[in-house]
Each structure stands twice: as structure tokens, then as C-alpha cells.
Length: 346
Ligand code: 0WD
Ligand code: CA
Image (cartoon, helix red, strand yellow):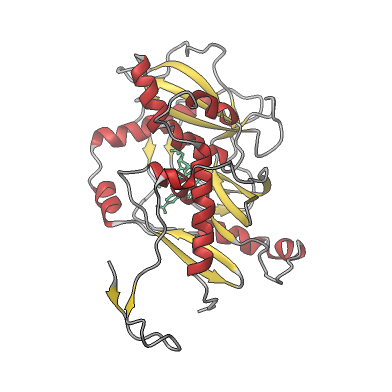
């Protein structure tokens, strides 16, 4: 609601009430043609090791090494190691944009050399994590989870970082053992599907350590907004149909086994939107899903080509639309440019 604000310097004395700027999120308002989205180009890569230390290289990159059949044989045991072979990242440590900014700092000369008409040290309108943009993309269809982003204008570039909401914090701190095990199963699935070397085989006996990460930094453009963002990717498939980064990356996901057309429809409506948004943004071409059986095994594997997901959902009238997500994101970025205008190095 509108709140009483101190008189704005230089503002009209008649404007005694100040209302915070708002942007509507109803999907129907963004239902137009798909906006321009430039093919994402990989600008760099970095890794975080088992101690969460930053390295300006691809040492944590893993290689896609799926089992030969669509049905894993021998069976994957996604619960294996949850109690005794799991090192968890300390999620109470809020990292913000830290590692991404480390990459930016390490590539200062290169970024400057790219030249910028406005003379900015970083030739991009926005710098952020991919995950934050994923949340923006899905906002028109999200009724459960809110988010909070902090935006700072620094030398012509808007830096967008997430602030944990009280609700998210409460959820994180009170996460049930069952939900924690489900999260572990997702990481364990990666261990069964990835090798450490291009010709290696997966070694699922090792410790799952969620401090480890490999991130790609991509550059792209949405409408009139240039973007530089980083995202954590699971593995690469240099022998696949798209050998070049970022299309060579494969996103791995787990999901409860689907038993009926109604369950599949619900999965398309509520879960696939997040999978699509996350992989579409950085140009990751494939998502490989492992469908979990009640005993913690993987009953089936299924590959989703990111660019073909819209075909799966377009027959369902009540479903989400990729164009709505992207048009909303474009409007949101324009909104940020209107609202965050003070470039203050302090
Ligand atoms: O400070 C924090 N609480 C956060 C840190 C919140 C969100 C992300 N991060 C960190 C991640 O640890 C990682 O270094 O940012 C980087 C990932 O950024 P992103 O790619 O922009 O994030 P997102 O697309 O949401 O997640 C990609 C993957 C996840 O894959 P799944 O399949 O679950 O979507 O990054 C991992 C996870 O594997 N990931 C995390 N790992 C550990 N702790 C976390 C987290 N909080 N969030 C995502
Ligand atoms: Ca994943």
C-alpha cells in the first residue's frame, strides 16, 4: 500500500503520497510473441572445490556417462551414502554474488577490452546468477514461493543478488529429514551419471560433497538488455549432438516416477517450467531426468531437449507459456532500469 514519504527533494509539493513502483505479474499481460533472445555464448568458467574455494578453471567439470539402457542396470541406489558419505555445503553462509564477482575481477582486462559504448568497465546491463533469473522467468506462474532480490547500480551495470526471505529461511532451517534425503538423492543421481574424465566411468561409491561446483559464465541479450550471468552445470557431453559450450552441457534432474497421464500433465505444468527456464537461460540443450521409484532406485531415464519442451506443453490450454516467462523477464529488467538509477560506488 501507499505510505507517507518525506518530501522528495525537487519534487512537486502536491505529491504528498509516495507509492512504491510496482510491476504486475498476471500471465495474460505478457502473452505476446516470443521476445528476442540471443543465443547464449560462453564467456568463461570457474570451479568451487570440496572446501568451497574458487578456482578460475574447469577442474570440477564432469562428463556425461549414462548407462547404456534407458533403465539403469544394475539399479542405481539413490539413498546409498546419505548417512555416512555426505558432506553438505553450509547454506547459512550467504555468498551473494561473491564467486561470480571473483570471476569478473579476474577477467577485468578482458571485459574492459571488449569495449563498451558507454565506457563501462563491465560491458553488460546486468550481472547476476542464472538461478535468480530462473525465479524471475517463472514468476507469472508462481503462487507458492516469493523471492527478494537486491539490485545495485555500479559503474553502469546493475548487479542483481538474492536476499533470503523469512519464509525461505524458515523452510531451510526446518527442512525435514525426508526432504533432505530427497535433495541428497538428486546429487547422488549425478554421481551415477557422470565420470571425472572424458572416457571414464561413474564411481558412485565416492562422497557427495555439495561444496563442489562447476559454473559457466554466459553472455546473452534479452530484448534491449545485455546480460552476463553464471550458472552451475552438472556435466558436459562432448560427444553429443551439440559439442560446443554452452549447448554441450547436460542438466541432470530427479523426479518422482509418473504413473498416469494426469501425473505427467501435472509434471509438465508445475515442474517442467522450472527445468525449462533454468536450462533455456544459459543455452543448455538437454535435461536428463531420472524417475525415482519408492525404493530409491531409478525406474526410468528420460531426455528432454530444452528447445522442444514447448512442443510438449502447447496442446494444454491451462499450461505455462515460454513467451510469457521471457516477456515478463524483459519487462522486469526494464523495470529495474527505471527504478535503480543512482550509480553510487559506496
Ligand atoms: O547463497 C546461496 N544460498 C545460494 C547459492 C543460492 C543459490 C545458489 N547458490 C550458489 C550455488 O551453490 C552455486 O555455486 O550459486 C551457484 C549456482 O547458481 P545457479 O546455477 O544460478 O543456481 P540454480 O540454477 O538455482 O541451481 C543450479 C544447481 C542446482 O541444481 P538443481 O538441479 O538442484 O537445480 O546449483 C546447485 C544445485 O545442484 N545449487 C546449490 N548447491 C548447494 N547449495 C544450491 C545451494 N544452496 N543452490 C543451487
Ligand atoms: Ca541438476
